[in-house]
Length: 298
Image 1: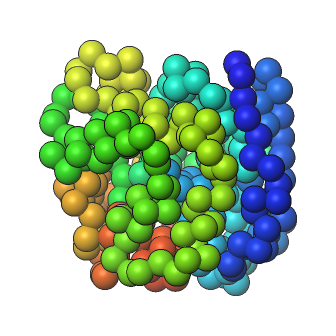
Image 2 (image 1 turned 30 degrees about the vertical axis):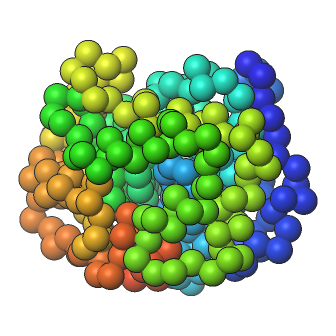
């Protein structure tokens, strides 16, 4: 597998993100990056980002979580952030991304009693991990995410997003993130989202990921996702569904998760106001406060 590695100097001067990176090599020499903060003995909060962002997305939330005594671990998905970037879109599959995060979280870091925070692809990957390895998880936080099986149609705006990502001659990552936010992002933040991608050759994952979302019942990932739904319907792992009030892509999935997941029953689920798809940008501190409360209550 041919990969690229973003030069370290691309990540200099990131606003509010001075956390030193950590690295581990998975099979085949693939290097995966993460940042972490908080007490080593604190309960673990595993924050998984989505498309086309990276762990930089959680910079507003990390201080709130660590101030509550939690240990926060924020990986960069393969193909994003400081992690290595396979150059062929064919190298990216749903199953591989699940396995890469499993290997990092369990084989390398040996995380246990994990509170998952999954947004966008962070939920598509994280909910699979929770369903397949429930003994590793203490809580699940679903924030503007889902677990598509291809059995139900995706909203038209999602198809428009997928077409734009796949067909654009040049991807402006900062612009795509801004389009998913309610608040204007300053130039230095937009530059932070652009930083992992010096040129288009680094963008295979960003271009591939929308096409990996199951949109037909016979998608390669559909069977595993159906099995995950079945598991989530019976697993007693406490779940908090914390969606924003302004995400047209994943918005309807919040109510479905609340109805279906056994761990979501009987719980008051917050709506994060004034936030778009990337609620970590628009209201990261508010989302983090809800997570702290959830951890303390369970």
